[in-house]
Image (cartoon, rainbow over all chains, first blue to last red; front, side, top):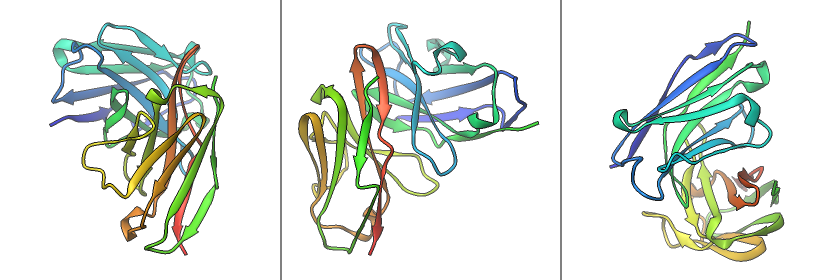
Amino acid sequence: QITLKESGPTLVKPTQTLTLTCTFSGFSLSTSGVGVGWIRQPPGKALEWLALIYWNDDKRYSPSLKSRLTITKDTSKNQVVLTMTNMDPVDTATYYCAHSWYAFDYWGQGTLVTVSS
Amino acid sequence: EIVLTQSPGTLSLSPGERATLSCRASQSVSSSYLAWYQQKPGQAPRLLIYGASSRATGIPDRFSGSGSGTDFTLTISRLEPEDFAVYYCQQYGSSPPAITFGQGTRLEIK
């Protein structure tokens, strides 16, 4: 079955760079049409899409955050990495990664990242 | 960027009743790329509907999606206690390529 799990720091300081890793199983990111995306959710607020990477290494970013985001994949390790620069307290949120096939059909459990000095 | 506006913000109903949730887009959305999710407290979202009207694997048939263009609807025919949650619509646009979520509708027990 398809599973995804996010990992990374739970606390980062303002201006630091956040690096999150999504480790998945049950599918291959070299299969045509498949993607892995990142979505975040500030406490008590709505979902916000961040980035998406496809099997062919095509990448999509949220226009409002594009300058701060980088998404990469390591197909051999079944991992997708998201980096977000210049973190701010407003970036405090639960960060999810999800398998994409027309929609986000499988999600990780999420990881809460707090930005505070 | 396409903006999705969900209404109502909160819907108060009783088990057994019918729920109708709306998602309106600021410009036309391809039906192939309109999805609905359910999220319960402390859990990740769960995909309910993709392609505007196709139920995801394991989703009960009391959930149905419809609509096209800029107006989409999620209907829950007879509410079960486990259906009370927050619901989000989501679209994937191609020009520019971007994904957006609505702000959510909270379905609460009356």
